[in-house]
Amino acid sequence: MFRNTILLIFMIFTFSGKAQLAKDQTVDETLKTVIRDILQLSADANVSEINKKYIHPEFGVYDVFRIGVPDTFEQHFSISFSFPAGQNSSRYPNLMEITEIAIPKEVVKYNAIFDCNEMVWDRAGLFVTDSISYPRISKILKQPVFETSKFSKSFYKQVKHIEEKSHRVVFTKLDIVFYLTKIDGKWYLTLFDRVTTDCSA
Image 1 (tube, rainbow, N blue to C red):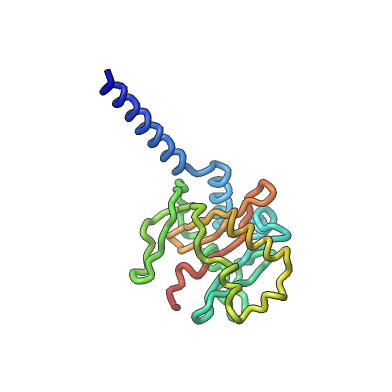
Image 2: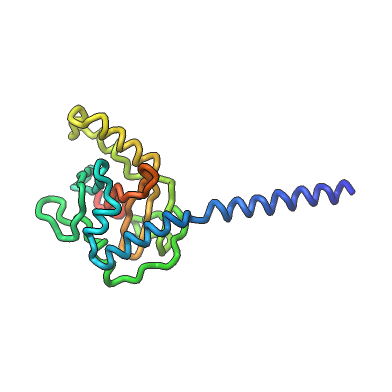
């Protein structure tokens, strides 16, 4: 009798553990819809709709990139699929290429890792995670090149919100990495990460 009770308790914990694991690996349907919508709008070259629906008027979207060794960033309040002039001439090029690539049907919860030695992702697909470790604008700002006093309190508040409330989206086929952040109950595109796949440093 005692052995049967122990076995029953073990089975309950095993099944509840598996159920929790399955729940942890599922992606929120609203978030999935937003991810696929942004990629589909990119495939349709409908940048005006992306700007209208997914760029927050106060937060804008941050473009984090690398010039030489240090990481840097620019804040924009709309995106463009054209190649701009200047140092940051590769802004958003990967989104432009989606027109020729099939968008994966599945959005998998996984923290994809890029290997700079092999220049490949550890898994192929379309992934989302809330494990945000890099790049962080707050860390970039600690570089001596930035005059931190010129940034407003609202700027720092926005950066903190992005770093604490975002999900990282990775489409490995085109090395696309961007953040989606929930602001006032709605998902917005808040950051493009172009340093994770830049192995030049």
